[in-house]
Amino acid sequence: MTADPSDVLLDVDKLTVSFGDKPVLDDVSFSLRRDEVLGIVGETGAGKSILARALINLLPEEGRIASGDVRLNGRSILTMTPREQQQLRGGEISVIGTNAKSLLDPVETVGSQVARVLRAHRGGSRRDAWKAAVDLFAKVGIVDPERRAHAYPHELSGGMAQRVVIAMAMIAGPKVILADDATLGLDATIQVQVLDLLVQRCRELGLGAVIITHDLGIVAHYCDRVAIMREGRIVELKPTGRFLEQPEEAYSSVLLDAARVRPTPMGGHAPGDERSPAPAVPAKPLLEVQGLEKFFAVGGNSKAVRAVDGVSFSVGRGETLALVGESGSGKTTAGQCLVRLLNPDGGRILFDGADVTTLPERDFRPYRKRIQMVFQEPYVALNPRWPVEDLIAEPLELDPGMRRADRVRRVRELLDMVQLPAKLAGAYPHQLTAGEQKRIGIARALATNPDFVVFDEPTTALDIRVRAQIIDLVRELQQEMGLSALFITHDLNSVRSLAHYVAVMRYGKIVESGETETIFARPAQDYTKTLLAAELPIEQSEAQRNRALARRAG
Image 1: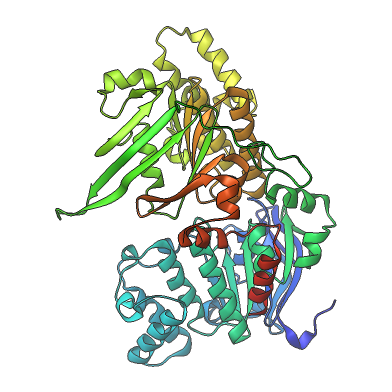
Image 2 (image 1 turned 180 degrees about the horizontal axis):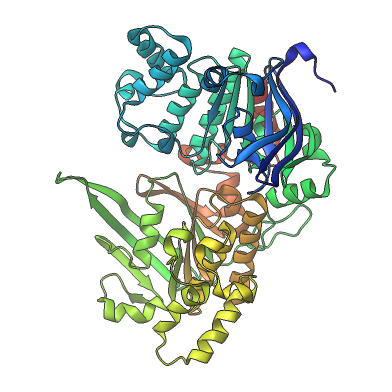
């Protein structure tokens, strides 16, 4: 269906962007209508972020628009003067980026920063601009907006900082909002709040919005149309409902399949499959945690933050427990206590019947072969000066009797186990993709043939297909090796694919636990219901479809 020209806010016509002689955007065309939310989806390297920068003609120094045009209300932004383009950015087209705190000035209050944007584009007094900023803070859901306006970025949570960035993008009344992975890394509940707010404000003000993402769940719930990008080109563009029902391109079908809830052999099932019950709890769990406590002192105050507050759970042999909750709930701290990266302040950790809670490091060392951890940010955890073969071989030093030839052979086995080519043995971490780094982290953890592995957010911030590959890999390895695992995550779709049981954490405590299917089907606690309501799956129940339609309709 061709859009009415008078209704088109933004028109991108055969846009090609090159870095030197290499095109990174190739003949990209689409339009954005008033009161429309368009989703642009693609994997890392597809050209999504370069497209966002090209739409405001603010490319990196080596980039240039080789051909094509970008028109706002019928006028080409490429023919505007530098001053007109400066007024365009933030005044007519605003960008909301990833990692809000990095976008804010750390030495200026957030209220002053937002007020300054308004004065730069619309003029007015400092007092009026400040009042407008505070009023908008209230509208974007910031509690106690007057006080928060006086805060500095480091004093805000990630979700609160993202709301400030949204306010900054809207303060000057732009016609178009570009949200470039604006919710990446946020908790599911905060993500939904931010997106609800963004779409609601666009509907109220008659704006157009472009949501650039790699999450098809976001597209399914919020976008009127979707464009699929691959290698700098738009390969498919159609209304969201039609796309989800019947994508035309093979690549689109691959992305959709990867984004759907993965069938699990652990009690979940694909449609039409027979259910397999979760395994019975063994008489003696491999891991038993009793009343675990971990406190952290805050500044010079004697008062301590109770990061883990009386947590108890058990994990049987070959079993997976998912520990879910929002950032700051204590999930990662609990996991680090299990592998003794942090020493508990109370409670007991029993592993294979032995109390390992307060063992001296020398006595705990043999248990390190049996208890391993895959870290949330593998690039941070991997020594950048070591090649992959040394990174994977390091844990093998726990076995001083192993010969060098055996270590080399074991490294090759582990690379094959995590489905990486042997040629990567000589590569360094910066030469790997995010998915490859995650796999190396998994290979390191499996090097000593452990009985128990803590997986800390193994699917966070990964592309659609890579996330699905990591989920399948973890599941296959658990089946082959009989691993027990603690799966720390806020990705609820992954939980359904991997876990026998779920424990929900909030403020350092476990507020609900049980079999995965029971928790998802019949949550007892309001907090658990809130987490599940924030899930944005591709497959939607009737209630979810109705909520998605309401979101799109404002």
